[in-house]
Length: 145
Image (cartoon, rainbow, N blue to C red; front, side):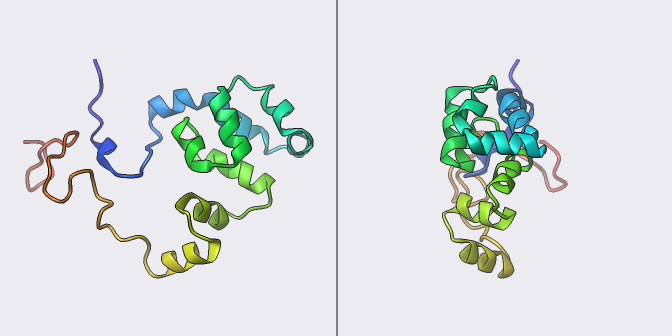
């Protein structure tokens, strides 16, 4: 029996749910290993060799090597674990978030200071009147009808 996941309708959003957690288990464990200085040094000395010690998929390893955090998230990475890669590289969370949006750190900071991204076009698939295939109708009180 498959679970109803109405949140799949949010454009550009990867929700870290149980399925993503299972998919990214070893990727996230690798990230957590970077909390120890000796592991950060081993990773920085030979990234591929260190990654090969983990039971990650080849795609996950390539995503890490490319430092593509969006790709890492699609393969099960949790942003709070992935932040360890950025910290290992000397990046701030703001720099990492900017890289995920295609903005410079300054552009990202300025956008956030101005209130963040507009909700227009970011609510759900079909928000312009098209069908919402994964959403269930809700009444005024937010209860399913």
